[in-house]
Length: 314
Image (tube, rainbow, N blue to C red; front, side, top):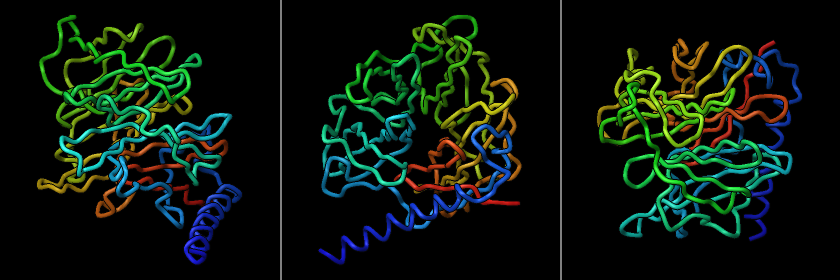
């Protein structure tokens, strides 16, 4: 037991030292308000992963996108957990907190949502309220709201309309990714991982497509030639940056990779010519950029949480 605790302490100390070292070095890239984050290269910290599943518990497995927010009171991580031995399976919502974004403590109230399916979620905090955009069991997407990030009220599935106001065709609305700006909610979504669409709303009740054709398609490079999804949108300077993932692997289990895309207007997108930020065989997906107050960190979250920090160039 003493040896195991010592090893755990060493692991945490090493991870923290690597992150602090990266923060303290003089660096001309990836600052919190620097548009050149699009050209930044990231490296994993020693001691990854920083958060893992709990075998034998309700979160024996961690699935797809989770979400991290850094707030004045600390860091929050929402994640989807499930136990494959439970049939039929149920995707439950969990919460973990941290003071540094490295060492995480599960909430004693976990799972914080267990009576309905919550998967592949992201969170926007606006006007003191948390809005969660998540997939549901019906291969659709749903809105949840909360005042404290623990107790969630399910508002229902998204009503997405074509440009002409008619409902979109039946089928999945997946990986919902929201971005709020100038009084307008922007909802990016995928359908069967075959493209990225954008719908907008001012009341979060009816969402209308900007275009009935997808804004981003798979390919033309092999790394995302078959399936894609958008995990996050941020604004840096006068451009928008999306964290994407995709696969070109035809057979399961597929290998997914993380890459970036940029846009001047949220509608016209250009994929980063560098392609994947990490080797495809590392199978890192569901990425998210998080400001730590000085630099951008990049977390990947399926099926564990790995932390990456900027590679410094002078």
